[in-house]
Image (spheres, rainbow, N blue to C red):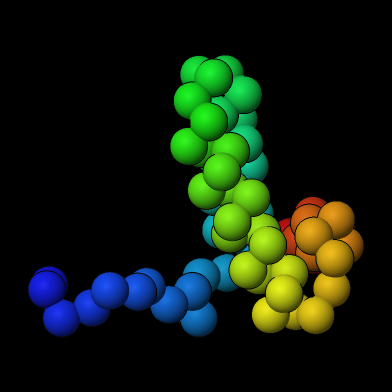
Length: 66
């Protein structure tokens, strides 16, 4: 366990990724714990960067293709 510091998302389906993003958003909004929103934003930023698209386009893509 001590040998890895990063987790790959290669095996996470689009549907599961959208569910994770939406769960973080929902939890952040309903608990007022900023860390959930910050984590959601960081994930979306990284993934949209990898996809070479805007964050809004990336979310729309996930929503449309799930």
